[in-house]
Amino acid sequence: MIIRPLPDEYSAYAETYVSKVPQGADVMELLEELQTSTYNLFSNMTEEKAAYAYAKDKWTIKQVLGHMIDTERVFAFRALCFSRESAVLPGFDQDVYVDNTDFNSRTIQSLAAEFRATRESNLYLFGSFNESQLNRTGIASNNQVSVKALVYITAGHELHHLKILKEKYL
Image 1: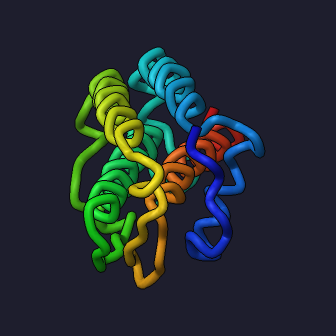
Image 2 (image 1 turned 135 degrees about the vertical axis):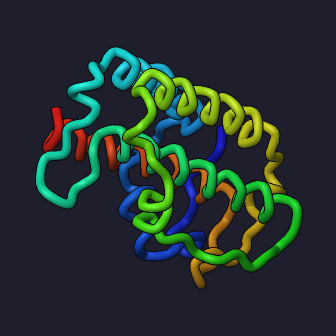
Image 3 (image 1 turned 60 degrees about the vertical axis):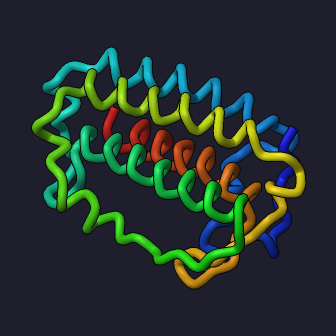
């Protein structure tokens, strides 16, 4: 089991995500459960629903899912890099990433399948880390972060967006 990171292992901003992971939860089991439930949520959605945005200039559901996929890839890349060596990596602007792709031209089923495949790969990656690797750190977005914190941030980021989806989109 990957133990919960301490607050000094991630930025104050990342607490938004780490705090979403329930105390005492096995984060790897949570990521596995979310892989299935999140895939099911999106893969059973109609194209009409997936094209919905709750307000002008807000992302569509397809764009939210695309953002979740991109962000998980970024967090996993950071975890991979930091597990191997301490590094300094740039931040990423989520709006630039969404603006520079066309998630809306894809089917929701395609995006859901990509989410599931991305998570499957990351479960193998995260599960491969030993305790020493989980405790290694690097710099991302000008903040020090541990590999284990990135695993929790990945789960918490998904939970954060699922909550927004349920409150504002569904």
